[in-house]
Picture 1 (spheres, helix red, strand yellow):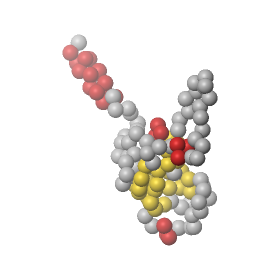
Picture 2 (tube, rainbow, N blue to C red):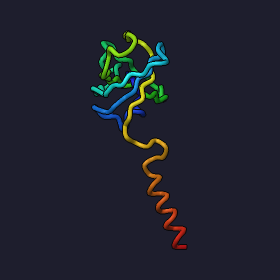
Picture 3 (cartoon, rainbow, N blue to C red):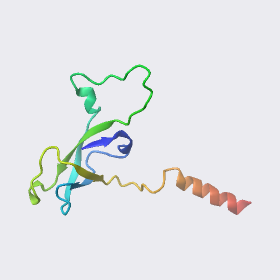
Picture 4 (cartoon, rainbow, N blue to C red):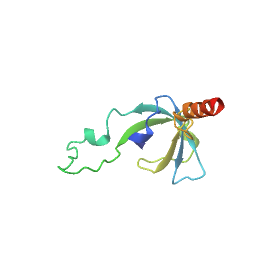
Length: 114
């Protein structure tokens, strides 16, 4: 899978993932994160793309990760290049940023003392 760098913050090797392949919408596969690439795919190309001078648009890069399917023979055949939706369980609550619990605690303590 090629994930955006902004989505890799809490992804670690060994975490569980669920795969839903577009061609098979009624089937899910369970996998584990086997490896995370140390660089984007473009860095390993024979001719990596060069950023033109004066081009100040920041583009989010994608990094390859390898997923090992736990039971590969339990479903329909998979082919190289199929589109998929990957959901990695990072054991993190994505509803609130990490700073919110401290902010809420400070907010309530301020309200109680004033």
